[in-house]
Amino acid sequence: MAEKIIKGVLQFILILAVQVLILNNVNLFGFVEPLLYVWFILFMPYNCPKWLVLTASFLLGFCVDVFSAQVGFHTAVSVFTAFIRPVFTGIFAPNQDTNSENNPSASDMGFVKFLVYVSIMTLIHVSLLIIVETFRINELGRMFIRIGLSSIVTVALIIVCDAIFFRVKRV
Amino acid sequence: MNNLIRFFERYYYVFLFLILEGVAIYLISVNSYYQGSFITNIANNIAGNTYRQLDKITHYFYLASANEELVRENARLRAEIESSYVKFTKREFEVNDTVYKQQFTFIESKIISKSTNRRNNYFMLNKGRSSGITKDMSVIAQNGIVGIVTQVTDNFALVMSVLHQDSKIAVRNKRTMLTGTLSWEGGSYTTGQVIDMPSSMPLKKGDTIVTSGFSRNLPEGIDVGYVKSFEKDKGTGFYNIDIRFSVDYNKLEYVYVVKNFFKIEQDELEKGMKDG
Image 1 (cartoon, rainbow over the protein chains, first blue to last red):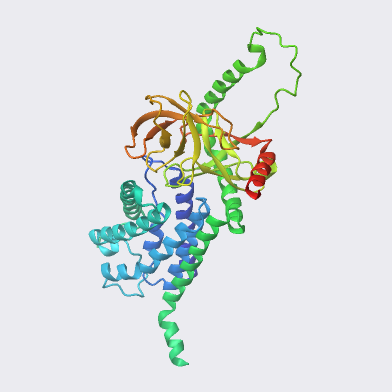
Image 2 (image 1 turned 90 degrees about the horizontal axis):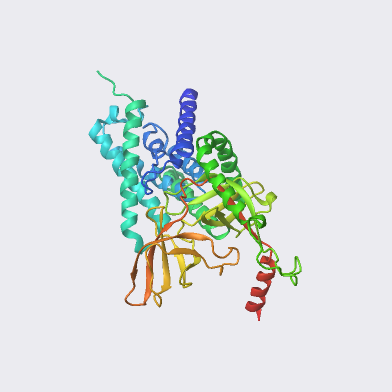
């Protein structure tokens, strides 16, 4: 159990560091925000208690906020994403026991299901974040471009990282 | 009683969600109404110290271009000092120190963190209150404007970039002297928008847009950008202009914070006007 917690904390710190120190400074086409930290909310194990998922997402969002000069936005959206997570893990991994120690990943769900799961969750997360930040009707066109590009880059990043860190187990 | 406990057991998840979401929304509202609140102060200190460490590593990559810019600025300043001018008139009636009074001074500072790809972008500077920086001071680079200081801690300052939806800066066309307002509608960080510029005098592509000096923390005549394209609003008769910023905000590293010696005096005057 203690091993699990230490592993989780390390993953938290690593993802936060990559997000804040590297990805926040990446500039692609002037529109794109790669939000890799969403991955952490998505891959917490199935048996992780719900309150822990919520609290961890809250902390992660808050830490990302601290480094982006706007306190609250990432926090609010992360908590929401964590809240709706069980609905989607239920849909895309219905056979999973809630006591399973596995992480939701491509090797666990199957690639297509995982891709859809990540895409939906990321789209919800990114859309909410950008809508809350922008909050203007007359910029709808630019806002959709922002949401689209950021989501695509984020999903691609998550899929790649997933392939590297949760390699497919050949039976 | 048992039922109540069972009820909470069942729905604790929803309650926890509501509580955490409430805290987050509270943070958003506090942050936007009281800039420089307790939480943002702590947050800025943590972020500032981390970014300062990171900057120690990454600033080596930009040394070449930074040097080049400094050399160019040196050359320009050298051209402006008195010894570079030939005196054509001898004005003996001029008494030193009373004719010209210095209004602005500049605190040089280094950017330790920045963003250009969000809707609302900020810079963080490596100097703060202890170097004389206060809220609302404007920040310029050697060839253009950068933003306005929104928060200061002892050692760091947070600058609201021109690339922010709340950024509004009074500008004018250098050639025709007509004034307008600079804003940024999102999109590319190289392109800004000027609105409310009267069309009473024709505009040309490539016209230089400079600060108008109406904003009391910003000296007059600082470059903002160059007209890229424009159209006349049929309804209002004002121009809507796209400009190319004179500064590459993504490469920016050294900036100057503008200190206005007359600010208190000007503030008092304005306060008197409001009261009276």
